[in-house]
Length: 238
Image (tube, rainbow, N blue to C red; front, side, top):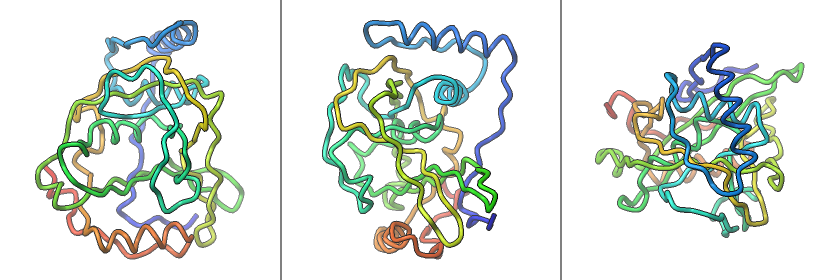
């Protein structure tokens, strides 16, 4: 597999003990039987992203991050994206436990910004998937203000969601951890998250908006990996 540009991030390793796995299984079983959205009271001695990662990998659950803590039903909305899959009238969700926390904790209501973000797995010539790998970037003009907030990650039933088709980038097949549902969805549960729950908070990069537009367009066309459009490295975020 060809190496990704160095601004892509790798998920931290995690290993859950049997007691924690059993507790997660019990929580997920209870959620699937509930008749209304449950508020998860997180009492386990592990990062929240590990629970969310376990949920999408071991249950028919997908995740949606937002700043709104009071959603009782998700309705399809028209998206605004260069990519055809990302430009539907739909509800979008992720099959990854870290990616939705980004949407939950980045405050796009109080701060004007563009964002560029992704969570991918890359298939090698034998078809084996590597990753997940992440990219998180916001406008440099917003980054200097540290535009973070407390947010919510919703756990949604996967049944009506359709996954995004893999993309061919150079010689690699790229799988994006995104799904879309064309119909309304009622959440199973919600989990409050803070900026400190996002493991890549110090790695969110700043970009020049005009350079980023060209970068995203090249990525959507499946062109070779473009040059790094970022103007701020992670050390400037601390």
